Image 1 (cartoon, helix red, strand yellow):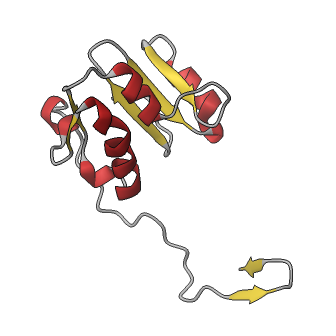
Image 2 (cartoon, rainbow, N blue to C red; image 1 turned 30 degrees about the horizontal axis):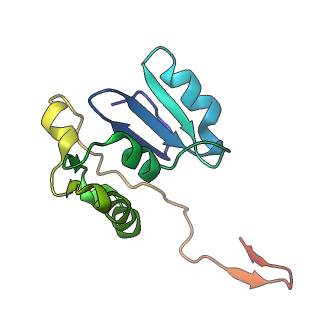
Length: 134
């Protein structure tokens, strides 16, 4: 949707603007990939950058609706949103795949193995300072 290809990012789209939240591992990549898109990069953890919940609380009007695919948001994050937005009587809808509704030529998900280490057993040893895994 945004053109960002990193593995950790959250895109928020309102009628007026769009923003992508990502962590420090992806600041440079996201800036390059979002250039010219009109999407604002929000660098998570940086001073003065609102959290997604703070952004939504500030931008969404009372009695509006926030929608997201509940399959890709963890319960704690979703509950935090509902708690922060409750004072504005914002309805939260999380049972729709909103992306599928507009991305008609979306590629199917791969059924290939995501990771194969080639090892049948992962061995670990405690070395006194931390866990050593090989």
